[in-house]
Amino acid sequence: MSSPRGALVIVDLIEDFVDPEGALSCGDAGLRAAERAGEHLKAWRAEGLPVFHVTDRHRPDDAEFRFWPPHAVEGTWGARIHRSVTPAPGELIVPKRRFSGFFGTDLDGLLRESDLHELSICGVCTNICVLYTSVDAQMRGYDVSVLADACASYDAQAHAFALRELRDTIKVHVL
Image 1 (tube, rainbow, N blue to C red):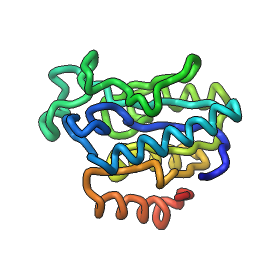
Image 2: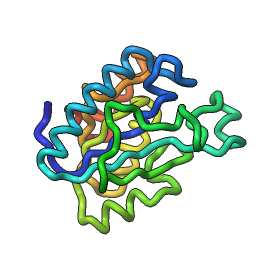
Image 3: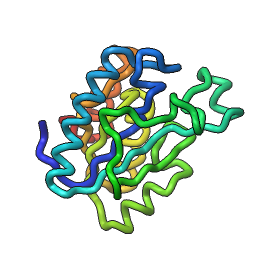
């Protein structure tokens, strides 16, 4: 496990992606990623470092459902944060409707208000929301690390591709 530094950004570790019964489950890989994220979370908390939970939260008629099955609908079981990374008091939850945790959210403002420049990102799906959140963070000037042992996808090849793309093209630290 990497040493905690900066803010921990946990992306989409919600029931619809982690639980085997979820609408877009990452299966066993998602469960393993959530468990590892929980271990990283304990380390961040022990150091008193900030944690942000960035989660899909859709309206029932969300335009994204033209491309993906309905998931993470606000107020449903599937939109709940998985028990392995249950937010503690003071940890911020940033809802999002698109792939990047920065697009149309308060994440950038919250990080800058807290004078945070280093982000360690984990979650699911590596090739979708983790990838686009990490790219957006890097393009906004953050020092970005991705905690690969706490990331997963429903597609192992796409997961591996995303980690290579983050490391080799985007120049994110893949730990």
